[in-house]
Length: 303
Image (cartoon, rainbow, N blue to C red):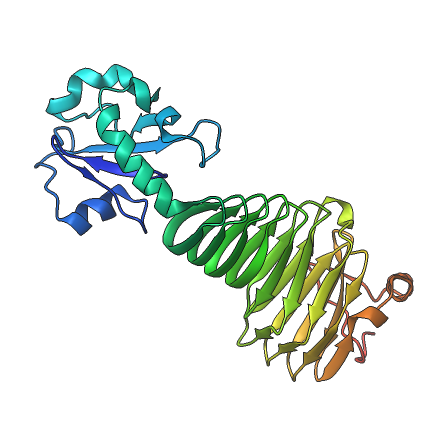
């Protein structure tokens, strides 16, 4: 799989895309010709990235990696020794630096920038904002509104996920809409299901890791349609809000790593009233089931 920043070079020109990280997509988009055999290419495929992982750093210091170091074009075959060297030390550095600055402006948000994501990898820092679809890593106080995306949050970043997955590694918050998934990874973060409609077998997830010490996991005005499912919380400290369950829909509340508590529709569930004491009682009565087994269904005969 090609990684960012993916570039394709001919002997005289540089090519890249603001919305894709695949060398083959770049080649096909620009209609480039790469010769007749893999071992004698005409084009140079590069992946250039910061070894520190800090994408807002100056591209001059990023490392140049050959995608296929054993098969370099004839026009640059003498530069094999420069694989994984910094841009400023590479013979192509003067060509690469202006291209990487443009790539960085499209993919990396800094100082309150507004990034429009259209596919590929993105990073936001310093109160910048990312909107659209892509794989986003959000740092510092940045925000996002992502559709069908994969998002990781760090520090105090926060935002909305409409479909896709958000992993909260910091102490900011995630709002999950329309079948999205949120995972609390730090124990300090917050996740919300807000105005969420879960339907047609979709699953909205909020799961808390690191000992379940997140302060609040809240589900606000969620409507679960037939065959929909909300999985909320792994060892949570507190749950709040109301969930409306229609026929053949359910909410699974996870306690510990292997037990779950299941409520099915039609009913309105007030999560705040499902106390830890109630769960402990259900556990003593054998009404908490292993996740792999058939979960306890509230209001039904479970003999």
